[in-house]
Length: 160
Image (tube, one colour):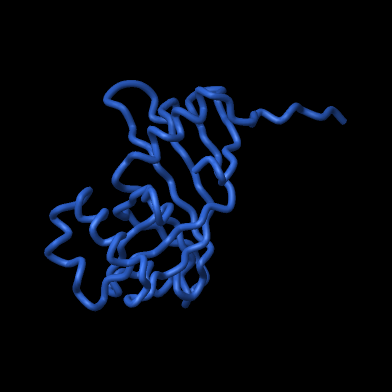
């Protein structure tokens, strides 16, 4: 039996730079577990890498992933855009395994999160203060960068 070398490499400077670029995106796909069926679900979410709060999203209580994350906080994010040309599988993407934690309405950090969120997403003024919306911190557990064909790197959660 032959042992194949691990195709996933540790992050180098170029991988970390690409990771930072992907973390600057304003939306992501969020994978979650349905609390009723136990099957996976996926949603498009607004996303931010907040200097003080870490990885963050704002979710309506009407969204299915709101209850799902309250019940099963383990989740995953996918960040990346498919370019206009070429094979979509050659375009960079970042998968982050995370744990979700809801920010309480009276959390002293919430006003700062709110202000920074509105700087990035001014249209959120319409709904950000509605009582069913909550900020959710997404604490990274592990990450994998696929930088394109033959360029896979493990990213340390501390580098996110």
